[in-house]
Amino acid sequence: MRVRSEDDSTARQVSGRLVPLALALLLSACASATGSSHATPLASLSNWPAGADPEIVGKRVAENFLARPLDFETGGTKTISNSEAMTWYGALRVARLTRDADLQRRLIARFEPLKRPGHPNVSLAHHLDASIFGAVPLEIFMQTGDSACLRLGLGFADRQWANPTPEGYTTQARWWIDDMYMISLIQLQAYRATHDTVYLNRDARLMAAYLDSLQRPNGLFFHGPGAPFYWGRANGWIAAALAEVLSDLPPTHPQYGRIMEGYQRMMPTVLAYQSPAGLWRQLLDKPELWLETSSTGMLTFAMATGVRNGWLDARRYGPAVRRAWSALVDELDANANVANVSVGTNPAPRDSSASAQYRYYVARERRTGDYHGQGPLTWIAVTLLH
Image 1 (cartoon, rainbow, N blue to C red):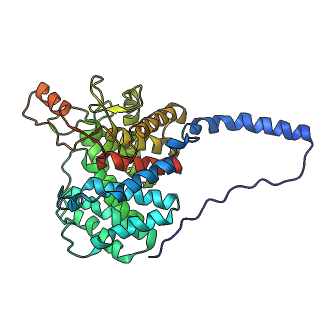
Image 2 (image 1 turned 135 degrees about the horizontal axis):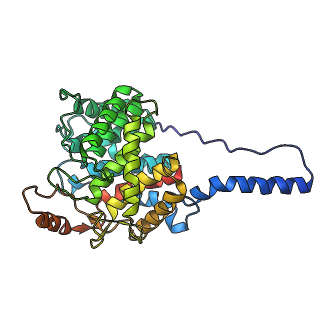
Image 3 (image 1 turned 90 degrees about the vertical axis):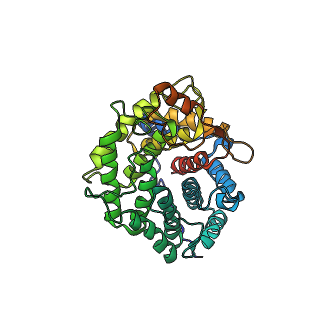
């Protein structure tokens, strides 16, 4: 296996002639005064205590993924699940960013059997939950140059847009907000691997259409048609997708303004609903409900990405990211399993009363170690380490 290492940013070195001591002190004081307005806000995303260090936490969660059997190996599912795929993707990015060659090698080696054409545990169903699997081999291609992984991953991206709708959208779109992460990630990975803008354009046009159709005036999203509830993880999925898309979309792109506007309309409301503990709730706007970690992880990733890229005010949002990350780390057990993850769920039945729909969400089971909660921790770690 050939692993490409990323170039380190060259540290700036200070050189120059000696100056009198008094002048040196004066210049130092001026630099501190002027630099403080820029350094202070981002300080909230650095200087972590040892237990919350993003590199350590990211590697712990990646090792957790490697230590566990895949769901199909235990009979939990027949094929790789979407939550396993997005956790694998995040773990690979942690390994690359931290230059942990051993972790990277083991994550890639685990994928080797799945490269075989027609592998029974890799679904080719025309469904977004199956298509996201392609993001993993595309990440491996970008790290190793493995052409078999490139072909495999592009197959998923291209099949997703086979026989599109008259508007040019994939027929995998269900117009639930959960969709946009699954669709966005595979198309973005195809773009990142090939630099072919056809993939980026597909993604951006569909994201803008989802925003036009589904975003509420307060910036949040109902879980689905006929389910007027702000389910935390569904909002987390689309927030994470917005952050991913905006990270690659150039400001000159026709859909950039619409997507950035949707993102910046969402984040203030998300911030307003953060609990004092730093976590978000199963239903975001229901203070009586329990604190849920998968939604927190996804929303934290989206917010941290905005702070890092200057899309959000670091003074306002940086401390919120820090509270959320610290709270998530506190939810990890000794084996890096995150607690209080909601089980996956479809939108509440649309023919039910509002009170019955509310009870439907309240009754969702909590799990520990569910990949819907594990994966976002790796995404956040990568963002905080940049």
